[in-house]
Image (cartoon, rainbow, N blue to C red):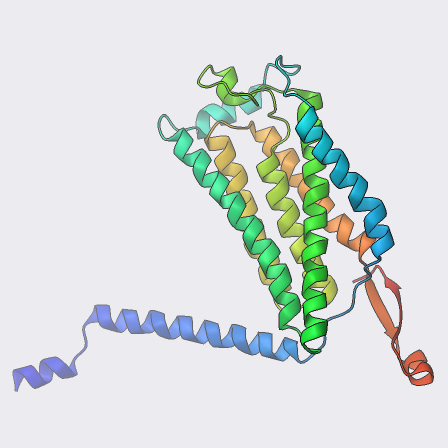
Length: 284
């Protein structure tokens, strides 16, 4: 009798486990329902002009590659002494041990943002309605828009690093010296992660994807985490990270809006011509 009663009564831990599983299942079903409801509405088309892309991206990519391959890292610092606030934040946030491990984690965090942002941009286009060919084209366009923002951000970041020649915290504190010890301003990890998050969220917003808020929230959390880890690892001053966030976010929002605005369909022209007549629409 006692065994039967014991079998019929569940322990608090099992009940809490089932409660968590039920909550996860409920949240998952709500997200799937929202995605399914949003998928019924076709995503907006964006402008992609191959001639404009060639005029902007080819010189940008060529200039960045030439700068990266030919320009040497500054041997002497031009900005050698940090501000009082930067020094105070670095001393307060840095760890006595494990700095290199934190730096490695920040590297993997940036790679995760890269893979997640670019992969999500491509997958979002594939998931939309309109047939396999149209979905593939839309996914490639989304991927291109995000990669374009990252390229512009990286080119600007590297140029400013070479021109500013700011000494890194770990070099200033005489803890470590590397070939790029005078390339602290501004943080490339912060600018790139912010550019990916902002451009993926902007493209998702222009398309009208139902999960655009989730893209913005997750990308922001990852970008903030990567930047803070760079300060903890003494790879950058706090001002380097802050400027990197601002620059990356600005380019991530501005470039998709300017180069790939939403196209508005005019139903009257559709009925007259039998095809969609579209014009650029910069508002969202």
